[in-house]
Image (cartoon, rainbow, N blue to C red; front, side):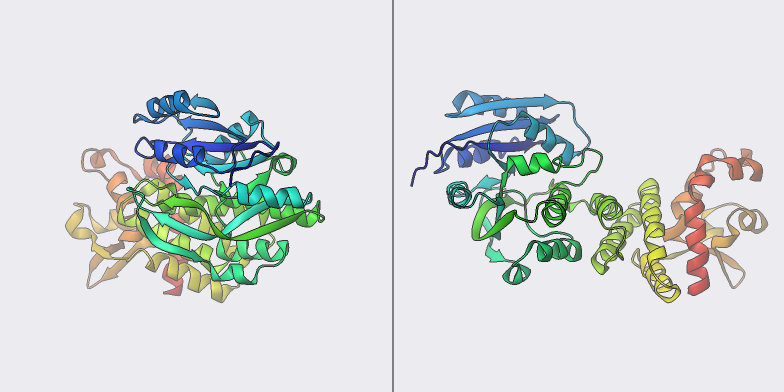
Length: 392
């Protein structure tokens, strides 16, 4: 079925190093049953041949095709999508990454719903289909069991909070005027899907209760799984969830999934000796702890450190330093067994290696250490180490 409604649909396409997949994505858009469309592609400073392919596609495109180029934003997906929204002319918005593929009836099935309900704010697909780098289906289309019970916008918001997600914005169709009303994504946060959905749900609940939504039990987009997917970065996910929580749900208690994600990210940073990233996660933990009672704090803190597969290193064998000097510097974190000093790898192995490097350890004094930027930055680590030592 070919549809030529007067309503224009803007495909907001975000690209970063998707050279291998862009053409497949564009062909899936060109193949839409609904023909009144425009394409806007933002390339976020790709280092591969993405921009070349995008320009080739523009020359081949049967519909309006605009390109936005910029230096890499550092993964600010929400800010980049806002630029696409601002450049769009459509009545409806369709968000997609250029490594994914849209199903041929994804737009037509939704426009029909909008035309029959003027209060409709957005429609979304409940079924998910994942494909590999060669567009082979990895999993048969499936539906999250939570969707079966969803009948109100309040339930969608609860699902968003408890599951840290509800649906992919890719494949959904959004009324542009409503997205404009909520201010689109948040430019200053690294989150995208979860930010837009939360703002949209809260807007309907608090400011526009007459607006409605529709769930469609079909596949709208084929989501490609590959090694460079941003969502696979556990550190990034924990940071964006923390930002989202502190802005939109700080009056609630952090849920179990948030803590599990944080533990996984911490384990990754510790096992890869990522000092600065580990400190970011410890700061997030410190923000979460006041929400819990003393017994819960103990359990959460112990689980956090244990998640990193803590190993004790015998300090005497790795550093040529006398016991008294080491105890003065890192006494709160030391473990003494059988007259030997041990230190927990998950807490300060990388800190010691940085602070007491053999090339300059002879020049170190306690005064220099205590005044150093590194010592001040790791104050939260020493604080949590005391808690961990007390409760273990």
